[in-house]
Image (cartoon, rainbow, N blue to C red; front, side):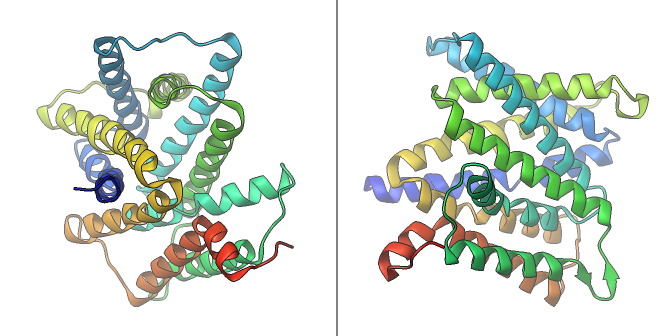
Length: 298
């Protein structure tokens, strides 16, 4: 099997694994856990497992003070992103929330243009309009509007995740596993601090087998496995192909929602999902498209 084929397989499995987030989260909600508890245990167990893995492989945990401060910032951003995403599952179908989250590459492009003054391309503008049209269609559910709170939460989640990616790319140059370990540590810490301010969001104990099982499932499958395979895929086939194959993430979440949790899939939602995937694919592959068709930036 060639390296190219292996990379594609790793990217596909990584995307599908990440798309299983709703599977663990929704079952834990049914068990009675609140959002804070679900997200906290996901990252806590991931930190423990990754820490053991790094110790076995004798990898260094050392970071400088500057790196630690940046890791605290991006960890907090990632924690807020996770809280908002998992919170949105309570207001809208998980598959739709995961699809809207997938607009984060567009937020990245906008941040790079506005803050870092990168030139914007026609492809970027077109992708934003296409994805925005898709989100509007997602808000049409056969005459009923989606809950605004759910849309706002997942939009904040996408923006925080995009900011996380920009900070990682611009400010941190440390090994991926170490970066992920500290990011998830500060994620768990952020969520724990957040839980102290309201009894309704306090961390609950895991009291049943299902609670433990699905919490560990969230830590291993959509977090650790997805991350490790994505890193391998990027090293083998490059970031652009791996990102495009990441479109399987929201599709997996939609299928889980429809097949497992009986979420509805209308024609409006199907077209909206397709438009968002097209828009994101354009933004991810824009360098290749611009080079091939010689499209100038604005």
